[in-house]
Length: 204
Ligand code: SF4
Image (cartoon, rainbow, N blue to C red; front, top):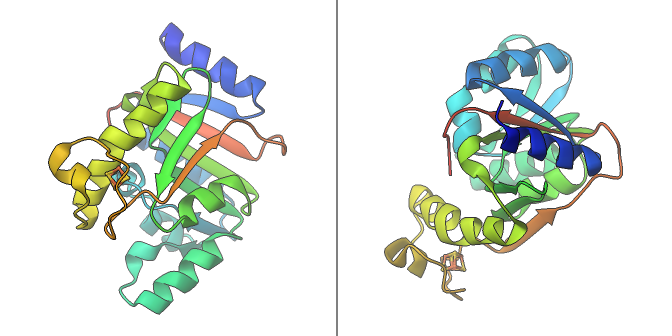
């Protein structure tokens, strides 16, 4: 573990967020399957990182109830499952950026993912590849707006201006994908939030 990650874990701890380091997504996956009880509900905050980890079917296979919108096509059912995930026992998601100071920064389209990170589930695990780590909270906001949002918009089939420009112009487009910008700066509930830092470049 390099000194930057040690510094990040130490700063997260000062914010009552538990940070852990893993060499690979496989290690993260195995650890999650150890710490999440079989008979519980798990919400999934859609993320390339979580998708690549491939944990959803393992959780379902051993008896957990999983709320993952990507398993559905119907708009009403997707809305219902997003709401259920807000009160799941566990919530697993990625992040758009994290500063060395420990700020966890995300944008969201409809807001369900950032809402669950902030309040609701009793346990939240945020999985972050090392590509998400930046120096300051200002750098994190820049990353979110100018890297993560255009790539997310492209992935989801939206076409706000940043898709062409590769930078944010704070558009008022109907195709805008970043309607909520949320900075998590700490936790009141000690032990609720964990950040699993992975020594891989994953997601955006
Ligand atoms: S505000 Fe508009 S241009 Fe800026 S990142 Fe969001 S969708 Fe893209």
